[in-house]
Image 1 (cartoon, protein in one colour):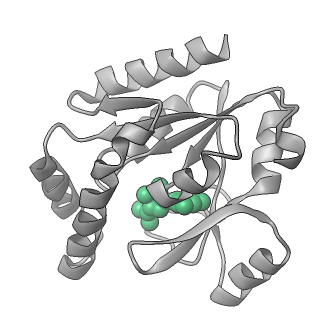
Image 2 (tube, protein in one colour):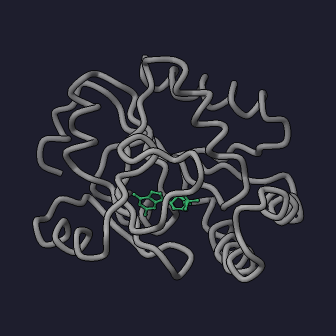
Length: 190
Ligand code: 5GP
């Protein structure tokens, strides 16, 4: 895919159902400056504490449409049947040019889109049991019941796709999961 073939860094696709602890894992990985997050664009509203340009590029529906028309996205998808999310090509290229291990936190649809066109390592973060997801989603308190139900529905489908990934890491013990992912990525980058 365009400039990404002759790359200096490495691309990592990290997926996993809502509530699996992916954000915590990514935050920890990012404390090592060999890793960098590809900041996606989204039409969803920022949650408390989320910063534009850091967690996401928050766009209006019209702005998102304009980026599609300008062919700025490597992929984009409607996630959980509500908001749109997309990976910006310029964002990924910048990280790879800088020799970073670029982390793409994208859903399974996005992974399936990019899988055949991007040279990347893919990791699916799975819960030890399905009930753990529901418990984590409810205790987070940031979504209403309807949103949680929708996210659990998506999670069932996402879990059924996990074998398509290069690696599946079960997040039973958070520090073990982080360590496993860290080692996997540094080994692949060596
Ligand atoms: P949240 O709204 O909780 O931040 O994210 C919801 C879901 O959107 C997560 O599963 C996340 O991986 C996914 N997501 C975030 N950015 C992108 C993107 O650029 N493309 C796709 N396809 N999914 C994304």
